[in-house]
Length: 149
Image (cartoon, rainbow, N blue to C red; front, side, top):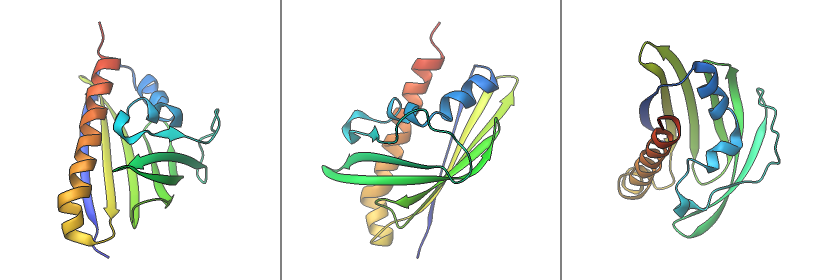
């Protein structure tokens, strides 16, 4: 199985605990996900975030309804957490979130290791462009939310 890597970073000028608290609330994911995915968190709030917590979602990917379940595989507040797909559209999805406090703000890092059905061409023409669009939207939303004056 061929795997791919996506990395993203963004600096948010807020305190570390505030930024981590936002990201560690799974229901906030719906706020920073593009509307065209029709993303919905199915697991009721509040969700206790610990290693082993499973969270269920529903979305539409290119018009196809998808159920997704992720599991928290690492939990180290307020510096990092990781989740892995347990059910969903990818062959593999492992997402590590990092939060590094600097003089300029909190550097939010995302590292996603993933594999797709159909491997390279499907990734190049469909999956990777979608992932890039999703994270670009997320960056815009976070800038708007956290950098309002």
